[in-house]
Length: 413
Image (cartoon, rainbow, N blue to C red; front, side, top):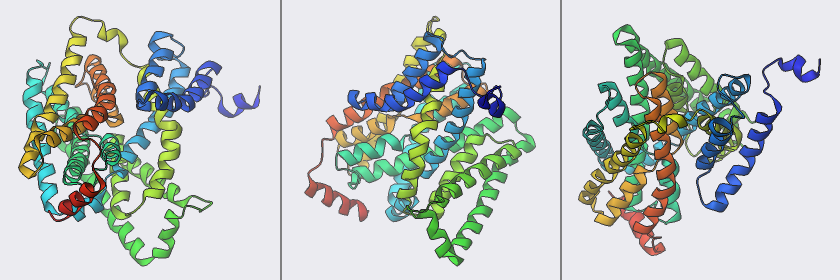
């Protein structure tokens, strides 16, 4: 018996999958950079290739179970970093104006989605509600880089778009998991599990803030970039696993605990860009790509070949885009031009990784069929590529003087 077998037993997969995934996680971002595509798109395609197409990794085998184990950790890290992205300092600095605008626009997204997906002839009310919540989400991973590269992140357009994206991302993710509890429990006492999780979050928040107030020098170590023990990463992951554990104990989906843990850490500790970069380094460096590869491995390719499934998937994409772009014209009431408002809508329609995670959750709780899950994955592929390109055409890079003036105007509203 070799050392590997003695230590890990049958946990490790056979040679080919682990070699291919290791090589893919490293090379795919390099190829994506050359092709000017989001890495997530190639990771999904790579999973398709080694899964449904070439059958190197087959679902239900020890190889697939090992990949799923890594992917589960990647999913939790993905949701944690999604919460980590929320810039509470920006929200507080902007005041009530942008918050009211963003909240109202998110509400209009929900109403438009509800009516839009009524045209899709959903199989149930639960499916219609879930699709409405799913497509009302936004992706800060698309919004912020696109605004930065065009020099518009400090403009009125940029500030309103970012605040709306933050509200949409947080609101949709939280509402979907709460809806999942309702679907799975059918009401009753289990509904109290989500408020109980928020109460626990409030208690942890109070403890953390008081500890940071009384022992600031100890908490400064969390953000020291040269700390050999990486206490910042250890504290972040400890909070992640504590909230995931609390979620499991309360019967709440673990992804909500992961998301709230990231949001809580971002709320208590501000200016954590360096820590976020280090966390993103190992998360997006391996575990999160494995999650996307695993989604590709499990992609319901055969489902798309069935009559009507591809049509419904394409309809989902069209409705999801219209639901964002149409209501965004209301931003003209806040001083944006029609072109700027459409540009903001295009950015808000762009989707990335969180949608894939939430769509997978929808299949798990039985409100989304594999065909519509495939449509959600295709939505990510289409909008992740096209949204930044179309936005750049609608909102070309701003003149530095105009950007500075826009930032001053945004700060005064």
